[in-house]
Every structure is written in structure tokens, then in C-alpha cells.
Length: 221
Image 1 (cartoon, rainbow, N blue to C red):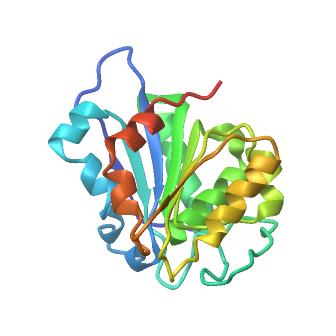
Image 2: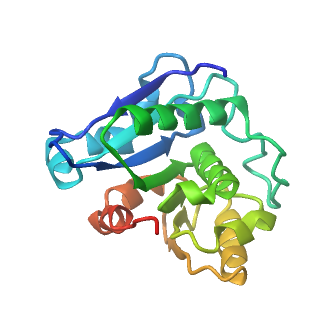
């Protein structure tokens, strides 16, 4: 296993006999590194705010992808998708290992494990969910994309996907095609394409209490 940096946010209080939801957060390309700091931008920082910690007590696992590596080896600006590789990347496998450690060592609820990511992390979230859909209670991919051929594995997974309508870094068609494929496979995903928004669709998504209320309301059956 390739070690990568990772940080863990814990609930503000851990009560005896209580288990808490867990979020695996996959950051974007600009936050790669070895400093174990940059990956805390956006959702990890926002969920660490005092009011947010009280409203959403949870664990958040924030691994950091290494420089010049990716959660998934795909071209982000392509119009068409790339077939899913037979094996996940070393960095994505290390992210799963960080999640496994949290589930084993903390007062975590295995039925409330959520997967989310933005941009490069959005691609990682689609990829990982397709590889192990049984592990997650919900998927929240933002401005990413995946392999439509994997959609039949995602039909039972609660999904809410976001993309900016004016995104020129990752074209919104990448999210649209995944959502269409999941629907064709019998799923009922939600899709929010944000008018007037470019690549940064994660700020309006993560800062919307309705989105986090939806996420934390999901439980794996």
C-alpha cells in the first residue's frame, strides 16, 4: 500500500454507545501534495466550523493525493468518457485504506458512510462508487464524470450530482451522461446543473444546508 497523507475530523463529542456518520472526501487537482493541509479546503474546513460540527456531528476522512498523481487516470477535459480501469489507482486505494482505518478505530456507523468529491475528486467519487457501491449510503459527486458502462452498479445508490452549466474545465455533459446512464439502469439520481456557475459548483453545493441535510439523511439498507 502506498502511504499518502490523510486527516480525520471527529465529532465534537463522542457519546458512549453512539455511532456517527463518516464522509470520505476526495479533493480536486489543485490540492494535491504532501503537506497534509491543502486537501482541507472547502468541505473539510466548512464542516469544522463550530455551528456545522454541532449540526452535523460526523467523521470526515480527507486523504491527500500525491503530486502529479490522480484519483483516476482520465482526461478531465475530454467530451467522451474513458473506460474504467481494471484496478483503482494507488492513491485511491490509499484513500480507501484511510476510510477503513477510521471505520475500524472510531465510533463510526458503517451504515452511514458517504462518498463525495469535487473536480478530480468528482471523477474519483464516481469511480470508487462503481467499484464498491455496497460500501456507501450515498454519493455526492461534483463537477466530475465517470464511465457510463458502470452505471448498472449504481442503480440502488442514492446520488445527488452537481455541475456548473458554464464549466469549461470539466464539461457538464460528463455529469449529464452519467446521470442519464444511471437512470437508464433503473436508478433515481438527482442532478442539479447550476446556471451561471463555472467550475466552482462545489461552493454552492456544499454550502447549501438542504444538500447536507439530504446527505446525512441517507442510510444504507
